[in-house]
Amino acid sequence: MSMALGYASMVNGAAQAVGREFGRFNGAAEKVARVGALVSSGDRVSLSAEAVASSAAGSDASVSGLEGPMVDMRVAKYAAIANMRVISASDEMSRALIDVVHSKR
Image 1: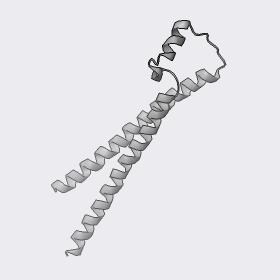
Image 2: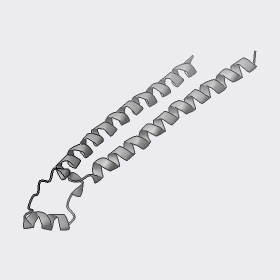
Image 3: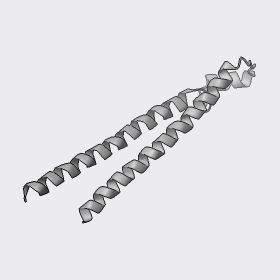
Image 4: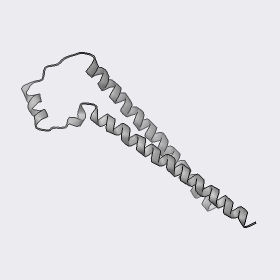
């Protein structure tokens, strides 16, 4: 019985993690869409000398641009895939266990 509970807990945890990663992916996709809309709107800005110097000095570039959200989308994708594989592996394990139990009868 405890093995069945462990299996259910493993599958439930992986399913919840898949849901979290889908949410994370959607949040990053919204950021990409917002930044993309701003970039393609045709609005032009002029940067101050201080902003240009700060950019050249390598300050936090992850705040602007598409790089961060694009990486977040990719990470969320692979994390969701990994959790889906946990679900598949646990399904295979349960099938093997059922086969073992049936072969002993």
